[in-house]
Length: 307
Image 1 (cartoon, rainbow, N blue to C red):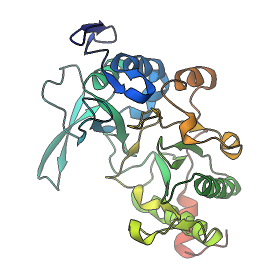
Image 2 (cartoon, rainbow, N blue to C red; image 1 turned 30 degrees about the vertical axis):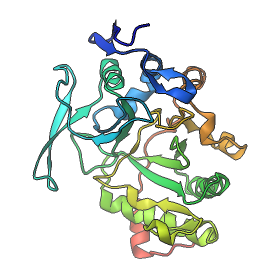
Image 3 (cartoon, rainbow, N blue to C red; image 1 turned 45 degrees about the horizontal axis):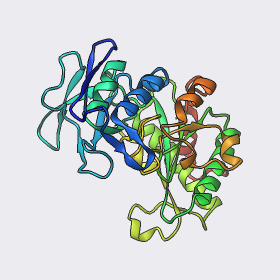
């Protein structure tokens, strides 16, 4: 296929794919067209996690080994049918026109412009100060996944005892992220009380493995439990989004049974995720949203619970 070939892919709106044979993940043998096919296949489970959320893009126009950049503003030439939302940025003192992914066509267009990583926040456009989930980002400081696995299973045990629905996914890189879906009406001020208490519990239970230090140089070889990553301006890699890694790994939901039996981030790639989704569905769907407000009220009265 010629490098100058263009093809048109049908979706809600026809999407032109330029240079479909361009290698985006050379070691994994994945071309731009292969990436387009991946997104089309996982769209039924991916789109609900992107719906009504502001997108932060990380673009690699020439593949994972080429120049890359973060982008929040919709780029020049964005099609009229791509939804955007203008949001005032106090830092920039101007409005940022974010892309909102609400269609398969938008996903395919993002693939065409080299958006290989999709990051979203915890709130929807209409309710920016109301998180729809709580997240704990487990970030290893040193190589090796076993520390992360141990910390995740510790949090799983606690959340189970608290009878809170929760799910886990890989970051697609080296870490894990645990999620608790929330009932409507929570604020970030409330959820911060809870996430801090859980992080401090992990530190108390596993002081040889866990750190809450923000500065990397102060973490040693421990796993950073990033409870501060949950906030109105924070983002995490979206479920099912690829990562710019040689293995073409993706941010993959998995079960705690799989995690306990030895699953690792590199087990889940653009090659095998479509079949996994077809067979397993969306493993992040873990039940109705939890009401953390009674727990938060308790914590505010007794900041150091005997969990």
